[in-house]
Image 1 (spheres, protein in one colour):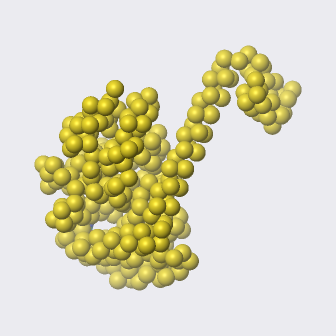
Image 2 (tube, rainbow, N blue to C red; image 1 turned 135 degrees about the vertical axis):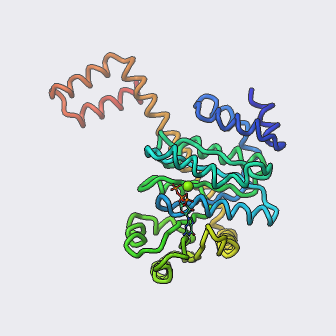
Image 3 (tube, rainbow, N blue to C red; image 1 turned 180 degrees about the horizontal axis):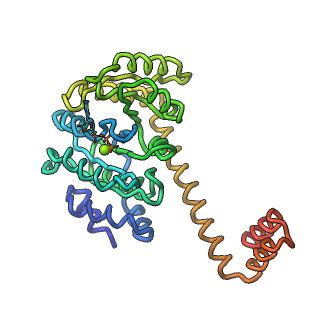
Length: 312
Ligand SMILES: Nc1nc2c(ncn2[C@@H]2O[C@H](COP(=O)(O)OP(=O)(O)OP(=O)(O)O)[C@@H](O)[C@H]2O)c(=O)[nH]1
Ligand SMILES: [Mg+2]
């Protein structure tokens, strides 16, 4: 059904690509599109960028895109909206920051709502990456503006994760504690034109040196507004990519990602199935009622319900 649109998208038709991404919001359509698109995927490199609100992620991405275009790469950019009341404003700001790329056919930019996942990685984001990949984009950048757990989820879809910091000691230590330490492949200290940059760089370097893993995060300073440090930042990405390829982690991570996604889908399908059974089956409803009034304890009721659903 979506064959024609997918063919057009694979051949570089941005209009069809945009429509397909819109269809992803609908689960039925998403399933059909993904079945068809899978054979075309697996070539793009996925770069995730996260960090606190206002750290300069969008400005940095805009500069990075300009640099990557000069090197001849085609690009896809997905901005995962924050669900905060500020998202409208942030979006408008992003649009302005990305304006220089809006007429470039080599760059496809799309904002995605993340309402179902609080700024994290929704099924739509995951599959939009696949669509961009199939459409031949060499590098796909995902800007995740969420905070907390949702920031960490970017690791689940990206090959390389950049975490953007700004000068100021308290903040960076807080962020590292919040779990960003585990997901960062590269620490970016943006706004290096601000006071305290040297000190924060040193802290980040100290933190990186304490990593127990084979890859120790690289630390890069940038001034996004002044276009400084962008080539160095890309070089750090290249180093990480080489590390992933040489160590065999690149393929391993991607396989794990497919497995991870499958598990997620299994759980979703089961949940739906359970809800459907509970709605339709009077005996199960009775068990729920019994738990409600205390004639059966919740553990026993839950076990009996699951038993009856799985082995009716
Ligand atoms: N001084 C200075 N200002 C910067 C730098 N980079 C970005 N800014 C400014 O910081 C503000 C926020 O930049 P954004 O790129 O919107 O930050 P962001 O991280 O994408 O913000 P959200 O998407 O809202 O989380 C803008 O006013 C930028 O002009 C920098 O290197 N130095
Ligand atoms: Mg932004």
